Length: 196
Length: 94
Image 1 (spheres, each protein chain N blue to C red):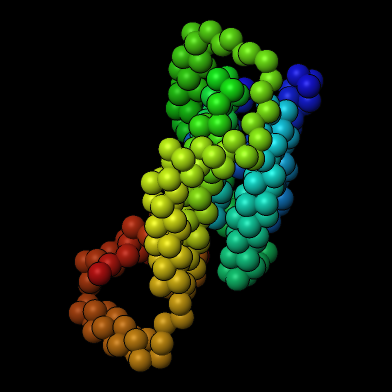
Image 2 (cartoon, rainbow over the protein chains, first blue to last red; image 1 turned 90 degrees about the vertical axis):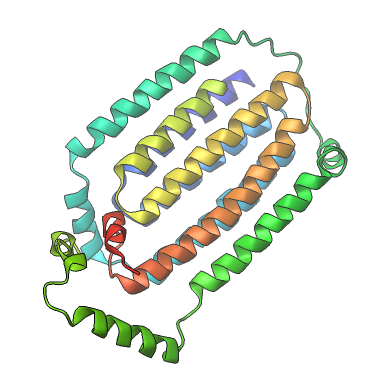
């Protein structure tokens, strides 16, 4: 079981490294799915089979499909690859990696000082999770449903197509805004327009 | 196990700080949330209690809500500007 854990952990880390360095969004998504599958194996090994199934269904299933739909709707072509290449110079990685490595070192230091005493493997069944979920955590379940509801409404509101009338109004205000010459708000906007 | 969560969290942080493409930014946030959930499940394993796994369920619900709103925002943004550069967002007005 320990070997399975280490293999899955190595796969998860490698797949995540590859996922955040890919230029193509779909390739990165596929590697991220591999990473999530490996994390699901880790869950299974440490006695959380229910969560392993949920990780597969919700993370690797629903959320990644959502990402895939958006990538398909945006329809970024070959042009996007060139743009990514110009954005993703090797030097860009230096500072973020350094800062994250400092944080990583600190967290490892902290976790090493917690002397873990793992007992016998206790497989938490779905029944136990359900009892805990609707016993002491009932309020949190209600809050989560509230959060999901607000997420649903927010996503619907943001994702709707702009009606023709609203479009006309916004176009009118845009034209009015663009009219005065030397608009200070727009100054510097040509800085990024070449990348577009 | 906690070390794996820390490694994944740090990787997500690197991705979040480095990438300019908004899709990759959201993906890095997902990696970080997943790592946080893994830490909770590790705690659940440590003490043999279901509480950590319940917390992971809440993180899952939160991640689903976050990613749906984030992707809807991204679509709306892409409709206004034909780019996914997060720097362009600093030039929005109104």
